[in-house]
Image (cartoon, rainbow, N blue to C red; front, side, top):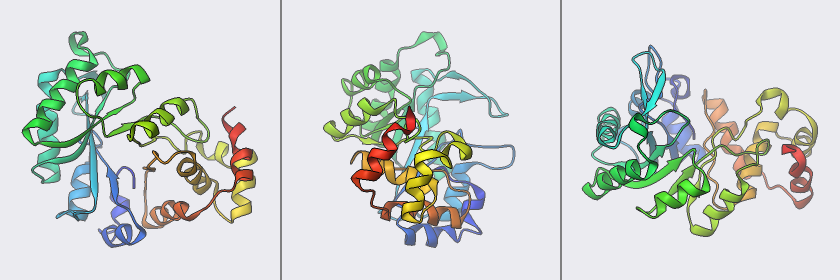
Length: 259
C-alpha cells in the first residue's frame, strides 16, 4: 500500500479492506501534505492503534515551506526535528522504518550524505527509529550509507517502463535489502495501455497497471510494491496484482518495454 490519501480511507473503512486485502506495508511522510490535509493525520485516523504486523515507513530529508514547496536538504542537526515530527503526527514512540531521502535539492552548506545518514543512525541507537533506509540514491551512495549503519530498504524509481535501476535492484537482492520502487507505474496511462504491456494484460484478464505491478514482483524477490492508492476499489485492484503469475513468455515480451 502506498502513500495514504483521504479517499483511501473511505470513511476509514480502508482499515478493514486494506488489512483484508493483505496490505502490510504503508509508505508515508510528514512532507506529504496539502493545504487541507496531511498524509500522517489520515493514516493515524484510519489505523491507530496500528496492527503489530503492519510496517509504517516514513521519510525525512527535504525541508518544505508552509505551502509545501521543497527548497533544501536538511542538515544533520535538523533531522531529529523531522523524525520527531513524524513521531508526533503518527502517535508512536518509535518509527518502524525511516528513509533518508537524498533528492536533487541543494544541501544546506553542502553537507555530505554520510553525515546526514550518521545523524539518523544516532537516532536509531536512541530507539526513536527501528530500521533505516535510503531513497533516490545511487549505488555509491548506498555503499556510503551501508558503511555507517545497516540499511534495511532502498526506495528508488524503477518499473517496467523505467528499468534503469536494475543493477541496484539486483545488488539489494543479493544483500538482503528490500527495494521499494516509486513510480512503478511510471509513464502515465497512455504508456501503460500501449504495446506489449497491454498484450500481456489481455492474456491474464488484468489491467496494464496490475501487470506492471506483477512484473516488479516477478523481477526480484527484493521488490515490495508501494503504489499510490486513491480509493478502496483501487487498493483492491493493486493488491490483486500479487496473485498474477507471469510466465517466461510474458516476461520476455515485457523486457523491451523500457527500451
